[in-house]
Length: 294
Image (tube, rainbow, N blue to C red):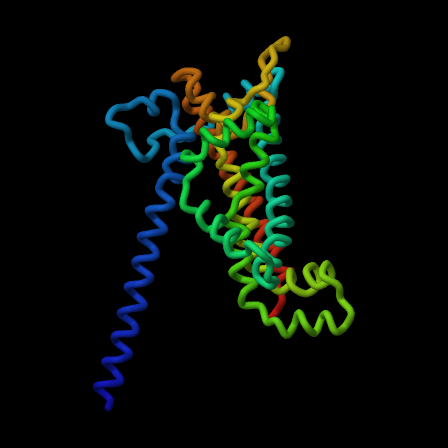
């Protein structure tokens, strides 16, 4: 009995160690691009173009961040303009996505109506396609609505992200019907049942939806490039304003100005990461406080 028990404990400890090692390696692989970006932002200009490139920085400096500050202070269009574009788009789209996904998931999960399965199958089918596949029909549709080169060309596709609706609907399927019936017996109407009974109990799925929409909004690049290209733009004294250019596209544009701006683009990317990290932490803490304690 002792040998069997000891063998069982040994296997458990070995399995735990293997899982920890795997997670550490997986986390390290995911962190390498971020670490490389941070190190690149700390390299002086001559180290950026060493071949073969080196991963670690030899002479760390804040020269790229100082140059970024000097450049943006001299421009008529500040760096904060593109920062504002990204924050505004992401927060606005996240609010729309969470509200409408919650309202649409409720009838899909708890009500029977004609075409319910067809509609849900369309939602599932849309998850099989990447954004790049839908760019041409999306461009044609938005062009027919005269929305190209406008904020709405960026807001509508992000706000209609189907994964949030799918996750909330699946979560609501497991929500007890008896609780909904009790709320109705107590006199709650459909709106009160949704916002005061159901939503507080499905906060984990809402938190997931919020996080996914936040990340999709901030990393929006290809859609910004394909549907607006930062347009409309206008020339003003001291520079050019790209009204719909988001921060990710602005980093790309800065990098392509010339070799002297490669370090500045890396500095912008680090600031972008810090912004996303802070907002993600705030979002996680705000939603976790509202989760119902089981």
